[in-house]
Image 1 (cartoon, rainbow, N blue to C red):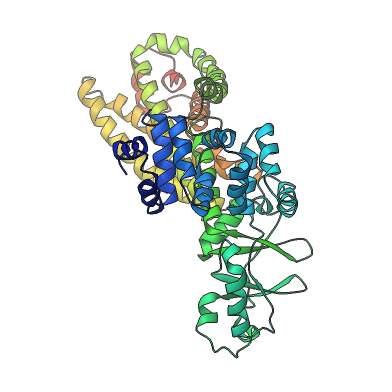
Image 2: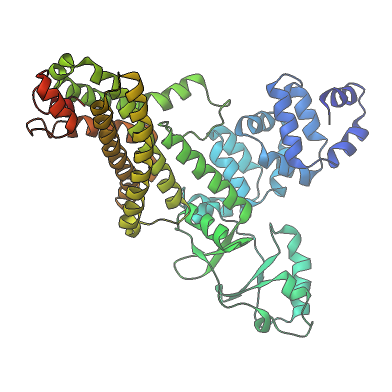
Length: 471
């Protein structure tokens, strides 16, 4: 709906027509309309609250769940206790917990007052699970069947209790609360009414435990294409389910966190525009400071070869190119390995396979880069073949080293329990710059390492090996 049409209906107090229009809109679209309207000044808080009050209870609960925490807080402060209670009654317990975790203490107290005693107990039970566990995101409302039930009995139960469940597409067969099987509603509806659930249920159940990491649970849902996965406790009793929509949010949050870390930014739960300038600066400054201080090591190592650079200043012009190419190559490898780790394609046991593959890739890539760069040097530096050869060989060494380090570090980080995303572009580049400078001094006393060094030696412009030392 266009904002001018919406505002016109509000001003004319055509509430019935406006309510009908809102009923035809998806809750997500309503949230987007309200929040964009507030952000860009097309509607004010009073108009947003009035629009929210026109929504039906079920739709209002969905809209409330999908809103950002700041918008929710505005609504909570404006709604009466009875209105807030109606919204809370229509929300699923797991969504309620998510809302409570984002609200300040005074708002949480008011929300809890709007819920009944039974719901508060359920909420407290979920809040007791660790933050990143499956238990913290599970929904305790699911359909449980008995294996002795007939299909007709199961259909009757689904009709009776299904309205209050988040999903009814998969039902769970339990015996003394222990999970013994699953059955799809499709199988129930397409089976004879006299057949027992035991005959059509699947005993090969994919499940997760309450303390399992929520990212692993979400990945299991993705891997097996599940609508929901049952969650069991340490006694093998079923306590809830994690649905595919919750899994999507988990994967989105984890991807956001990995992208932030890979860019050298501390993760933030808020949106880009919803995070203050000072918060953004704080999240970025720490990493930039660490990388800046790490880069001073590179400068110190480079200073050791100042005399060599003074003899042949042209060598300095190649350092940025070699460092930049090394950093880029390392970032390519680390990014692909991090992605492989994230989707379960690469594990630490594959480290030698990964190294072997990356070294072969590095050889092909470095030969291409060395030939192109050698041609450039030959043209730009008075057809100096020896210089082109020396820089080309150095380029090959840098690329091979960079890709090897770039693929190993994320796997090593994963092995010792760190987030592999830490070993991404900024840190890889800094490490490679330092390693490149350090390794460049290992041949200063070895005579005639490359043909170009013999060329330099004959001219007596530098001591043997100074060229490699300088780089």
